[in-house]
Length: 128
Image (cartoon, rainbow, N blue to C red):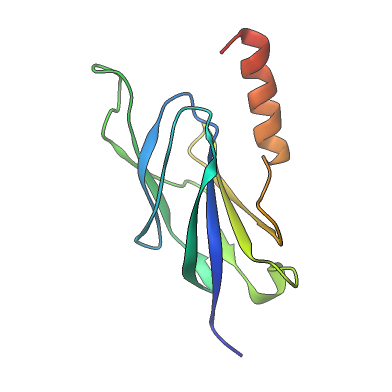
């Protein structure tokens, strides 16, 4: 059995500022506007099973704290063979404001995560 999987990757950003140079195991999977994502797909990403590294760079208006800083996901991320449901073709990469991330798997283009929906609902309530 293979020690890797090939998936299309869809990025979701629930942070209040743009992010760029999002790297999954050193491979660039794109960027996203503030509270954005889900629109771009990186196809054919070979992802090894096991521990994953995820980082991104912060953007925003000039003078915004941490602009250009690289952030590493604070939580441990891993993909196990038994974690990927049969017929999965997509990996959703969800980046949250507390510098954590989450992976979701789906046969079709991933949707906003439950945690992400809570964040976006609060943003809509506040009028962004």
